[in-house]
Length: 315
Image 1 (cartoon, rainbow, N blue to C red):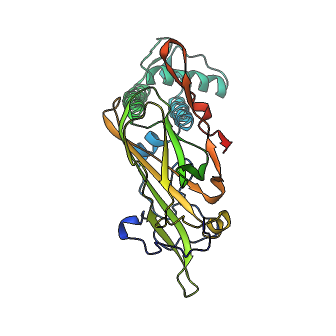
Image 2 (tube, rainbow, N blue to C red; image 1 turned 180 degrees about the vertical axis):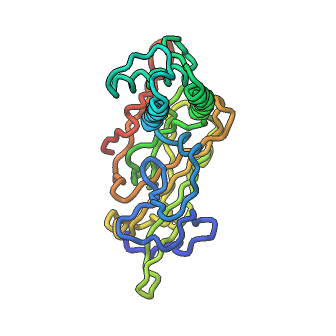
Image 3 (spheres, rainbow, N blue to C red; image 1 turned 45 degrees about the vertical axis):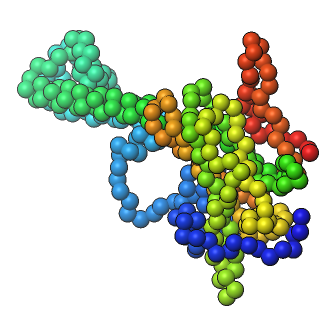
């Protein structure tokens, strides 16, 4: 391969711009994280969308928030029940502050959850009003929590995984290609998958000013009907490719990043799902090939080993 050829396709079309613009030119800056999320941190005034935030946050954080709110709300009502005095509650035992607070707290929990054991009950108008407020808050909170749980469980989410590294290597008939592979981590069917791959890099515009450029990378196969096994996505590196004639040092100097978008129809959700990822220059392996991920199994079945998606071998 001739590594001294001039760079081609330096003027990207408007359709090649992925929305990041041309000014992100920092050394080593990444547009997309490995998990597919934008490498962007927003500051300043942002929209407050608690429902969307609670639907999208990790499960651990969501459960911690639910437990924290549950304890905090009942602790607040427990303190309010202390204000009228213990005479306004039947069945409580007077004593220290913490002893009385623990009784009002658990009375609030029982009213909040509509369990109502009956050991403690309101005995005056003020405690009746507070108990009514607790019951109303509990009904609304459980309705909201149920909706959030359903939204989180029913939210379409692809489980398409990407190989950790991409390869630049020869693959057939002496051709060289940029390639990576994907697989579906679930047993469901994802059909009509389409891959879109773009390359981003930084170059000097000739006036000592750097600009970020984008170019769509044509693929050997851009669409598959089904994904029963793995799919190795290949971009042939020909003379029209922005990767043509480039070495590892060249790509490092260019702050190169390959951005991938996978789109398919998930039959479980009956909706279109997406998966995205990216590969930077340090995540490229040269002159190696992927090891096979599947092999014949028992009962005439084919076994797909998802744990081997990253494994490579020398050519």
